Image (tube, rainbow, N blue to C red; front, side, top):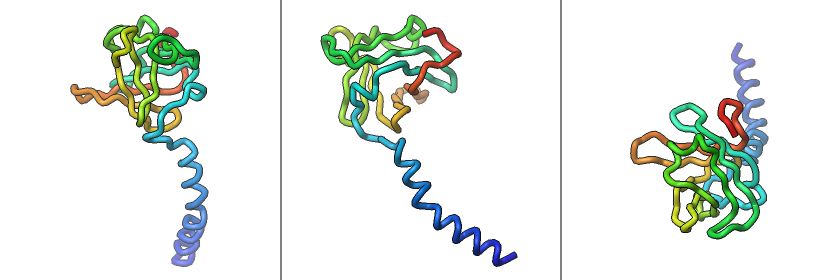
Length: 134
């Protein structure tokens, strides 16, 4: 039985570099979002449920790049975002006046998080949820 434990430990240690490289492929925490990788549908989530879909574009508009929040976002997003801008550690949604509507820190290629004073975070996750209207 002891040999099996030693063998399993050696095998796990040998696989460690492969696991690390697989995890780092989606780990972009603290890296600004580029227009080409942002383009598409993103699901806004909070409290463990999908709220609405936000579509980010790569075309320049007024204060940044195009953004459109679905009508269902009205209660979760303060204001009406018309654009998004990359930031030093992620991105932010901005209104027509160029002021930040909601800022997000990048956790990975497909997840951005906005820490709220209420303690309930808002996540922006790549892809359109089937549970909300686009």
